[in-house]
Amino acid sequence: MRTVPEFWDCNCPHQYVHPRAVAVCKRCDARSQDQPDSRFTEVMRMLLGEKAIGEEEPTPPSPTGSE
Ligand SMILES: [Zn+2]
Image 1 (cartoon, rainbow, N blue to C red):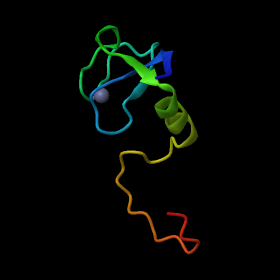
Image 2 (image 1 turned 60 degrees about the vertical axis):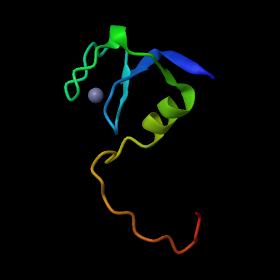
Image 3 (image 1 turned 90 degrees about the vertical axis):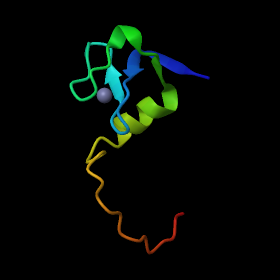
């Protein structure tokens, strides 16, 4: 599996991808040095969809039916 050493996963259910410059997650207290590298797909998802992740905003039904 492809991983990105510049990022790491904390234990939060959302927004768990952090750059290695962030030493500790303020929400779950996970430490960069103890945590694994983030998966490439997770990093991309974080970078592309930064808005409102974890806000649990309800998604309106899509008229295009993309799912
Ligand atoms: Zn966390």
